[in-house]
Length: 122
Image 1 (cartoon, rainbow, N blue to C red):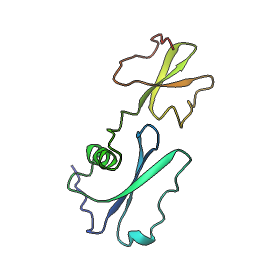
Image 2: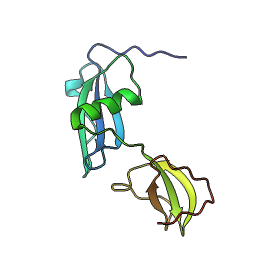
Image 3: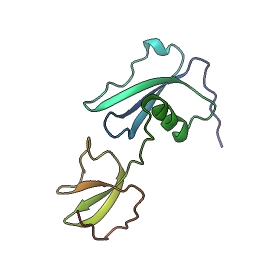
Image 4: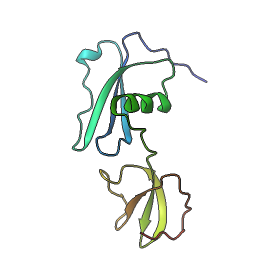
């Protein structure tokens, strides 16, 4: 296991969906972060800036979103569905993203379990 020590002035740009609060990406800036070029937000995205913590993992970043919005960020796991059949999976927000598969659509799983080839009714 490799442990990466962050400088004291490391900061995160935590980007999430404004509507659903799904975590979209985390940009990590070290050293002179005030001058670092953070990711520009796309329509429908919001962000917060937070200092690096002791546990730099998904639950900590989701906790920052919760503290800023009062909403627990939902899981971003989606099924890619075409013609009522599950053809794949990805992390996405159906309100902001499109399926890369032609004719496919994204369905947020919300804890439901599907496998490739399963039928899905809208």
